[in-house]
Image (tube, rainbow, N blue to C red; front, side, top):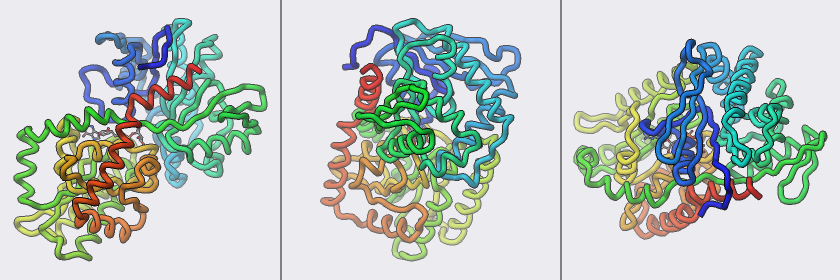
Length: 459
Ligand code: GDG
């Protein structure tokens, strides 16, 4: 049961996944579940760029969930979303200062769109509503809502990692941005490491004091609470859908195409944080070092393109095409393709079936807030014959899933060795590791996540 609260839940995030759309991001599916169960309103950008209708609220109701979206002007979109959110904050938060592209114009756009969001959201709020703001696109939103007289409880959840203070302070004007977090009642991150970074930054760089229970008091007297809340998945549903998917024609045809070969699977948005070039190199190293695996293994990488207007994302796409081509050129035989590299997205029911068909789930981000794919892979397995998860130590999920084969994604030898171990792991060990991970995922599912976050927000 959700903790009792009279008002509605208002979720604010950059993107809103409307009822008829497939939710391809981790955040989108988690929020949709939260709202459907509890009822409420979801506010955000429609995903459309339109000069005429920019800033005008469109609403849509589906059952107990109301959706309110606004379009953005080209300039706002480019400066706020492509610019400051995705070219400044995203690389910074993923420990890539080399890719941070900072400029005042983008920062101004970011503040402008946050202020537009604040204007529109302020008009929709009733006194008892609980407000839940999501992710790095909207850090200053609570401060702007407070300026407009909003006194409701407001929580913020950061879905990305929060890097160490030493890196955060490299962001120009970091203080103006990050001290606005103190306008929330609760700031949530995924892991204990992220929480330590947040507290360290507030205490040592902003002069806040720490009180008991992760309560912080800033030098100008604002108080807020911080906490680690590891996001989960709908474990039961994924397990059920994966078992059902075995009856689908697509899964049957994938099975046939494998002709008894073991499959390794990767599923990631095409993003430089996901460690894809390094992963391809590790797989190439496996083929180089273990010729007995030739023709016995296939690596399926599903990588739907993302943020393709940002140059780094176009570049990584070209880079992966080159590497996949190179590996297939080196090792393929007329009747065997070592890498199947697919730039499409698929319905979730089908993905779960693909996971279940794979002997190994290969999840090797260089940095990741949590990584839901790792959890979905585990939940999709056949309990009688489960596959093995090879997981980056730098995904938040590694904190909860120590029974996976944990690797440093930057070390191709280590990843190749883990793959070899995974491919030859005896059934009894696979079952033991899988059971322990599944127990965790059953306890810490997406419902438990939002209950603990909302519970802490209402406290
Ligand atoms: C951010 C943080 C954090 C992927 N391809 C398809 C598809 N997906 C789904 C997966 C999964 C979701 O998208 C991806 O979630 P991740 O957690 O792996 O990664 P991000 O998108 O980067 O999410 C991350 C998350 O927020 C939640 O807080 O864990 O660290 O970066 O659910 O299955 N879904 C469909 N077709 C695809 O082709 N339908």
